[in-house]
Image (cartoon, rainbow, N blue to C red):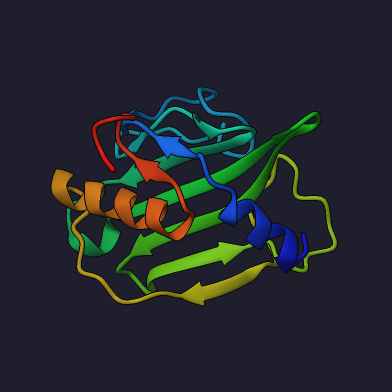
Length: 158
């Protein structure tokens, strides 16, 4: 995907994420490439329609120490062949803090795959505890802000 195309998708208005609810991750509950997610320490949201053909989902990994915990946000575009990754926002203290991966200038077809061989950009450092509900909400807010998605029910927020 070219950077201009990704920028145009990001600038499209009218996307909204009404609510985010994490539930235990079960195998095959999410589409490829997330269909293999499962385990006692993983929680995931359903694949939310945030507007048009754009979808978003979030994954939370719990752990006994902070360095084992993580948060992931995925932005996809639904196509006839499956879902195409547009961006992945990651937060984990084990080595990178908050960073985004984008499929810009990648010549391979990433439909139903993770963002691979794309650009990785470090974002501002934040201090979050993925096991804290307030911090998970802050992560979702950062995700929505970065990708021009309004958060909350329509009519309740500006």
